[in-house]
Length: 84
Image (cartoon, rainbow, N blue to C red):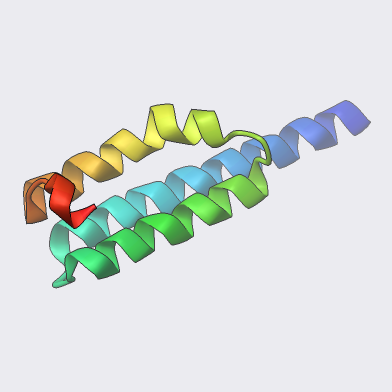
């Protein structure tokens, strides 16, 4: 029974993360935001994801970060080295 509860909890966290990511991508695509505001939204989602899944920073960087970077670059353009 404990294994089922653990699996259900994991699935609940995965659904929550998917919802946060989808909402974040929609906000970045559709709302009037500055680049800074967009980056703050992404950082907030990243922190929440890492609280839910500690030690999965690499997974975030491989799976989710590129999706957010792509939307930000499409909307606000690339960041030059001088801006970094």
